[in-house]
Length: 167
Image (cartoon, one colour):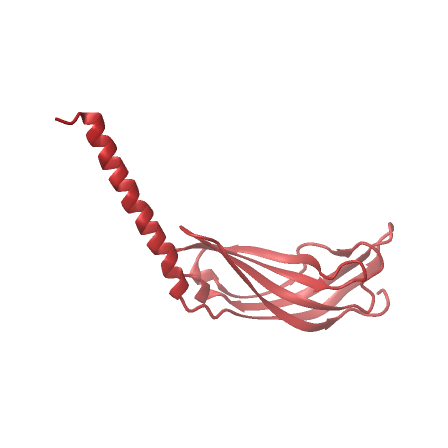
């Protein structure tokens, strides 16, 4: 006859195999969801655009962010991390990203929102590269599932320009 330890080991191995199989199916099922998020960002005001005492450019913006990220939520979604970044090019770097705002969205009910805020984090460039600079505002999101791999995507909104002179 088999001992108690042998039977417990067999039962635990079988249960963990079934659990791993169910997690794999849950993760695979996310590939079939139709994700159609939408977003719009407006710059309502440039609060200030100045040169800091140690020579860096700093900008404060008032943003109007409207987004519908509800389609990112499935039964396997734990939460969504979203952030807005200003993206621009300089002679030294082909891509500079500065995070302006972020949020953790825990539920589908909170994934459709409209907020008007000043940038949560400072928009600072090392040097004098922001005067007259064209830039994009990009809404990035990371879908954090209960099981499976994390998915990331973005919506790029272009056509923004900073003033040629400090204010």
